[in-house]
Image 1 (cartoon, one colour):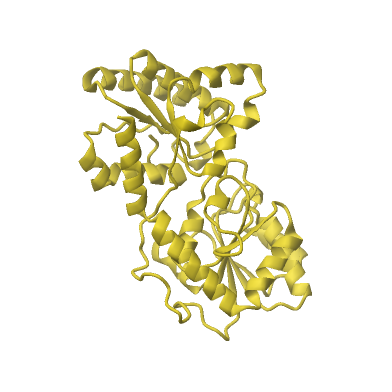
Image 2: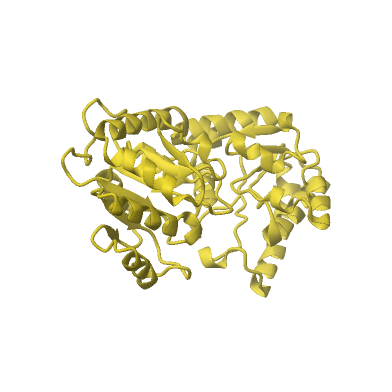
Length: 364
C-alpha cells in the first residue's frame, strides 16, 4: 500500500492501517510501500528514476511473496492512466504467484477509460478473481462494468478524533459564538477543481445581497493559483474585506481555524475526488458542511441534515446554501451536531479499523 511521504489521503489511510494495533493484532502482516513518488508534484510523472524504482519494487514484492506465502495480499491501486498500468503489472504478478488479492480504491476513474480498447481489455483481466473495497456505495458505478456487487466491500475512511470532546451539547460549540461575524472555512490546496473560483463567485453573490461574513482560505499555493493570483481573483470580485488567505497550516494551527469556523465549504469537482478526509475533519469539529455530489461525498454528507450538497460549478446554488447557514445560527448548530454524531458513528479511526479487520477476515 501507499504510505507517506508524500502526504495525501490514501497514504494517510495506509499509515493508519500500518500503525493499527487492532489490525496488526488480528493478522501477521508484512508491509511493502508502493509509493515511488518523492512529493505531491511527482505523482503521475514518468522518468527513468521511477522506472528503476518500480523494477526494484517488483523484485521486492516477488521475494516477499515467496518467503511469506501470504493467505491474502492487500493492494491500494490507482484507477486509471499510467499509474494503473504500473499497478496492473503488480496485481498480475501476484496472481501468477498464486496469491489471493483484494484491492482497496482510494481514487476513481475506471469508467472514464473503459471505452478505450486497451484499458477495457486490461480492466477485464485486472478485476478477474479479486475482491474490491470501495470507500462509498456511490462509487460502485465506477467499476460496475467489471465487478459483481457481491465481490465488493464498502469501507468509509476514518480519522483520529483529536477534539477531546464528544457529541456537541445543546449550547453553541466552542469557537462558534452567536453575535460574531460568521466565519466560512475552505481548507484545501488552491486548485481550481477544488472549487476555489466557484466559491469566490458565490461569495460575490452573497456580498451583493448584503450578507455579513469572513471566508478563510487555508491551503497551499499551486501552479494554477499562487497567493498573488488568488488575491487578484479576490480583488476582481471586490472581496478584499471579506476573504483572507492564510497559506498552508498544519497541526494546532489548522485546528485553530476549524475551531473558529462556523461552517465548512468545499465545492469540489476534482476528477479524482473520492472521500475527502477534510470533510471528516470538519464534521469532527461540529461544522455543517456544504459540498458537491463528486465521488463518494454523498455518502459523507446527509443533504439537509449534516449540511448541503450542491451541483458542481453552480455558484448561485452554493451561495443560497451558504446564505441559509449564515442567517440561521440554530440551523448551523443543528447540522453541526448531526455531523458530529455521524462522525462518531461512522468515521472515527476505531470504526474504520474494526470495519477493515472484518473485511480482511472475511476474505482470508
